[in-house]
Every structure is written in C-alpha cells, then in structure tokens.
Length: 411
Image 1 (cartoon, rainbow, N blue to C red):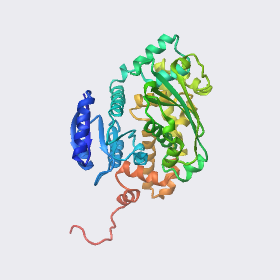
Image 2: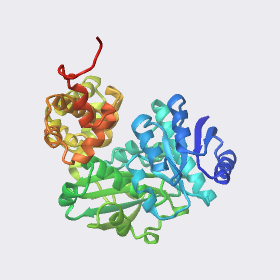
Image 3: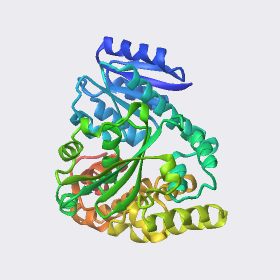
Image 4: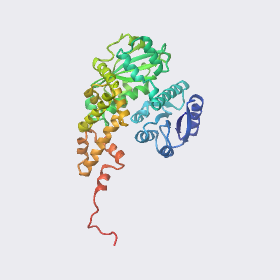
C-alpha cells in the first residue's frame, strides 16, 4: 500500500478526498490528514509518505509552500494540488517544485482515477525500478527503429503502459520560443534546465495524457511526444496553449507543430523526421554504453569530472549530453543510479560548496554568483540559504571573530 497525506483547511474537502481515495484508490492508504500545512510539515519531518494531496490556498502555510518544503527536503514524495479555482495560474508556482498534478475540489471521478493511475505507476516505478519497463526507454527504442518485429514492440508496450494497444495514440507537438535568450537573461530567475522542466510540466497539467517526453531540443525549440488513449482524445483546441504558456513564463511562444500518429506509424517509420539524426545517434550510443559495465561507470566518472571543471561557466544538462553524445534520459537515469544524486542536485551541491568558500573570503554576493556559474542573484541567494540555513550576510557575520576590544565577558 502507498501512503497518502491530506492537507486542507476545509473539513468537508478533507472528508470528500478521503472518500474518493477509499473508494477509487485501492493501492493507497491515508496515513494522516491535516487542516494546515504547518502540522503536515511537522508530521513529514518524522514520518514518510508517497503522495501528499494539498489545497493550494490555505491560511498560514499555503500549498505552494508545502510543495516547496517537500521539493527541498523529501523530493521523492509526489504532490497533488487541489484547488477550488480552475485557472492554471494557481498552479504556476507549484510546477517549479515538481507538483505536476492538479485537481479541482469538485472532483471529476474519471479525472481522479486517471491521476491516481499515473501516481501509482510513477511510485511503483521508483520503488521497484528493476522490474519496470521504462516508458521513455520504450519510445527511444521505437523512434530509433530498434524493435525487431511489430509483435515485439507491442509486447514491450504492454509492459510499460496500461493503455490497450488498440487505443494507444501519440501526438507530436513542437513549441518554439522567440527572444528566449533575452527572456532567460533578464526575467527568468532560475537556470535553463528549470525552464525546460516548467514547460514540460505545463504540458502535463494542461492536457490529459499518459506520458510526455521531450524528444528533440534545438536552441529554444522543444519537440515532444505525448501518449494518450483515443478513448479520451486530447483536445488542444480547448485550451489556448500559446496563451497559457505565455501567461506563465514567456509571451514569445508559438505552437509550430501539432499532429497525431499511431504506434504502428512510428514502428514503420512513417514519420521518420520526428527524431533528428543527432538525437537518434545519442540514443544508440547510450544503449551501446549500457551494455558494458566499465563503459557505463567510466561515462559517469567523466561526467563528474567535467562538471567539477566547468560548473563555473553555467553548464546545463543539455550541454553535458552534447559533450558526451548520450541521450538525456539515459544520462540522468545512470547518473542518479551511480552517484545517488541527480545531475542538478550534484551541480547545486558543488556550486554551493564553492560559494561557502568564497563567502568566507568576504567576496560580494554578485561576484560569487558569477564565479560559480549562476546568472540570477535572486536564485543564488535562495539556493545558498537552503544549503547553509543562513542568508549570505548571516553566514559572513557568523564567521567574524568577536571584537577583543568590546566590553563585557567573563571576569
């Protein structure tokens, strides 16, 4: 059984969600229920959970703040935002903290079942990874034409997805950002990897689908493949996709591609321009490395060395995949498996260790920020305080020796 925690200041809302979980989520048990975020955080400090359902707007600590604490302290816990508001702007901040599920308080049963199904699949994948066929791996193999037979392809699909093969449909979308370099430099207060993640999360929230995967990234043009059931066909026209992204992160956005394909189409390479040649070669190279234990460990050792030598110039995960010519999904999965940290976590860790050293030398905040590869000072301040428990100035003050000329003391 997976453990669920509920947070909502309204008693009726808590009881309703409890009923839905008891009636429609057999794989989950409610281990705790709270009327405020503060109580839930105290509980989570001493107890674990697999998923937290939290209202967004509550007196005191908001659901956004709860998601932020979970992201910073127990990032394995899934977060589902529940709100009485249908406007996606209430989920914007939550997406930065991996809260990629969103439910209205007037809960639709079919939508609730879908979210529960996706949650259970993700949690089961993380807990029992060795017995799980990864959906992203399946699509990498499919797009590269690596299945020997169509039957073999469908057998593998059945192992990674509960959607019947007869109902499985895919949608290819391409999102283009204009003037993005200026936006990321002047207005975006996080790194480029976070920008990519937020775009992906918007897609997940805005449209019902089983799976979303970034398959090509060219400068500021992102191409995704979405998997869904044709029984619940995606309706991109129901939401102004460009306007939605524009309101949340950048107004200079265009949806330049939007087409449906079947698994059969992809197997027979009827749309062989979906995955560009460079990305295809990265995937094939990744699989070749994965077959050799020594090569796999050598790859991650070299990636670590590369990060150690280049973190100060603001490298991103995409820069690393280009350098070592491997797919992003493979690299991130193997890095976490071997080092115990994600690439982002490792880069933050090494940058903050250097920042602590530089702060001890009384270097200005702006200069420290530049010297460790960050563009935005506000983001750097936030990360430093999360890492040390102190603001930069508080940390510098804690290093100062007491003034020997000051009065007082033990006599």
